[in-house]
Length: 145
Image (cartoon, rainbow, N blue to C red; front, side, top):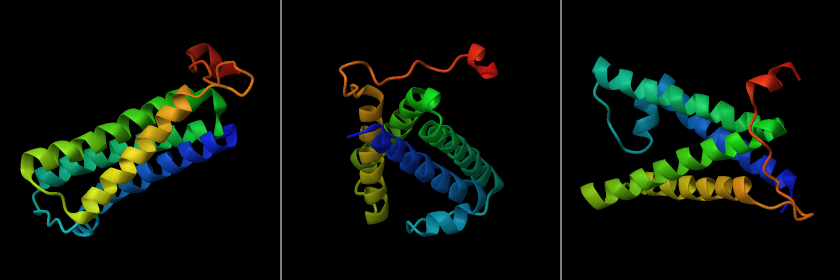
């Protein structure tokens, strides 16, 4: 696997987060209807969903940025792995606590797990020359560069 593969994995994870976040934030009722979930029209529920959707959209932009800006790759991989693995764990918690998952949600959990593990790989993989592939995190001092 190469640095090229890392970039593709970050891009795929970022795009997934951005698309899901956009759906939840901007069209929550049709988005969730695709999973067989009917949402009430209540403003408080929709407000909570939209806030979470914008959070996912923002994380998606950050993870995607790591695909094109190598100095953000480690931060992006960390954000991607934590976000995707937390969502996958939430699906397992829901399955254990609430009963079975709808097939679409189970598939989403499998994708989240796969992308989360892929981001962990990006974060921890060694370089071909035996050095560390992990770039140092960007700092405020890097802004002028």
